[in-house]
Image 1 (cartoon, rainbow, N blue to C red):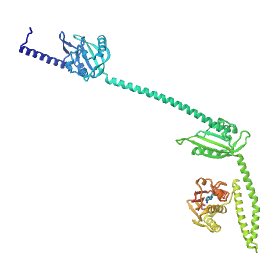
Image 2 (cartoon, protein in one colour; image 1 turned 60 degrees about the vertical axis):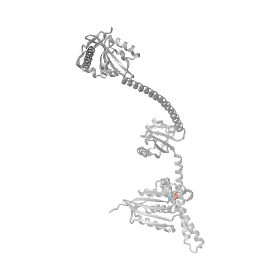
Image 3 (cartoon, rainbow, N blue to C red; image 1 turned 135 degrees about the vertical axis):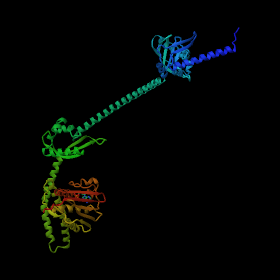
Image 4 (cartoon, protein in one colour; image 1 turned 180 degrees about the vertical axis):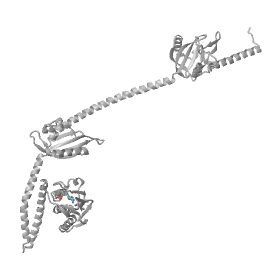
Length: 554
Ligand code: ADP
């Protein structure tokens, strides 16, 4: 027979249980907050009290505050203590966790591993990894650190659970990074291999082109050399070695022995200047031939080799033997000098006879025309012979003349008057400052001016206007002859004062020898002055020369 309880009995029992529950909750709260260090657990054999032997308030607070989960188990695997982190990890209220078997929370696939770790933990400190299900049912990895604890009422097992999610993620990231690193290393290795093969190929190309350059340099009949940026020889071709008898190393020290003593100083200073100014240089000097010890004239040129950044990386030079040509030219000059000198005497007497004929009475009109034509031709011939004689004097360094103080304004005026007489169809405008006094040779300066005016007329077939200006500028006098004729290209301007040089295109269309400007520039040089040209094709030219003004002597 089933014994039925009275209402009062049931009420009493309920009050009893409520009291027990309240007491249990208070106990748990007290343990969590560290107010007490004992725990009553309801087991099969009735309620049991557990006390931590060494627990104190500080430790419990500390455990509660840890990030890690912490549980204590009895020998049956019942949870005697849990901190709130563990309860949170498994997604259960803390009050329910305590006194439950821990196996409740271990997923099936980890049960045997958990058992092994905890079994070891009873013997000695052990560690191991398992995963627990969180409140969302997701598996989260944990590291378990198991150690046995001695309580008053027997030994318990403490487990600290460290969430490995972040660590695992870090490990995963690290692994990923390592993998990427490995891939990058592999790519770099491959790139390096490719680079090496490119370098190898380029080196091969370079070698081939170096060999090619060497072959070329050794087999052309010109001396070739290269020098460092400071001008020290670092390569000479085979022709250099054959000619000088020195290889590159010997040449470095004996270079000065190779140049004629009279040319050495000038040659060295030109070279030094070129290095300083980083500019191409050209010069002529006598270079000693090893085979017979003679000095032969050479034309040398050195060009700076400039890289993309604008830095000089080397100098490249050529030296060409011009001795034979130079001797030929000297012979020609000598011949011109002698011939023009020899021509001058018969020409002077021819001129005299023509003048005598001019003064003859009762000359027929036809004869008068012939005489005037003969006079003009003889004058042209004399001008030509005079120019040839001047040119050979200049070459021989014999163009010398006396200088005295003179009024340049008057001299220019006189030339303009002469020109107006010779070229009656031209309008020659004069723009002259008064009393420009210079020290010079009137005859030679007139020669220069007349040459400039003659050219202005000759090279302006379609323009009849010429301006002649004389002015003072600080301590120099400047005379300019301005025309509006055919002009010349910029490239001709630099060369126009050289002997026999004629501007491009003029050789076939205009008669001339290219000596007038050469003689004029030498005359101006002798006066310590300068001559130059500014010209534009088909627009005209301005030829100017400057002379130092005479310094007044009180
Ligand atoms: P030539 O006139 O006998 O050739 P020059 O020495 O006087 O010799 O002149 C040299 C060259 O300069 C000429 O051949 C000509 O090409 C150029 N030249 C001289 N004057 C002028 C000028 N006013 N306009 C254009 N070209 C000129």
